[in-house]
Length: 85
Image (cartoon, rainbow, N blue to C red; front, side):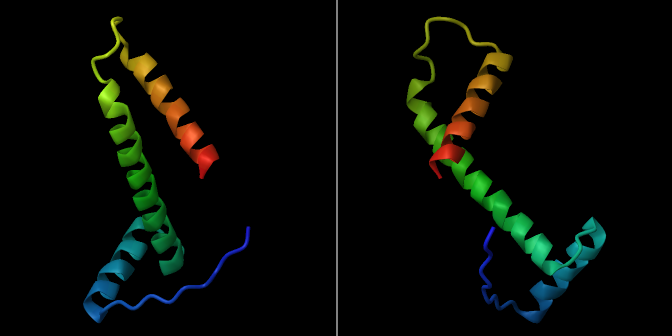
């Protein structure tokens, strides 16, 4: 995997907060923490997009769907989104 360096400017107070979290949560360094935070935001955006796409289908099915069936369908949808990106 090729990585690209980016520059990020943060004010001193916020950087101290980041460093506190890095230390308390056991991250190896700031970079690991920031990568993780960015991944979480990307996943959150993908989930929101998937839910928006699924919203029109809510209530359309004549059969009852169990929580397990729902989770399986959600997992398949995320796998498909991952393949598309």
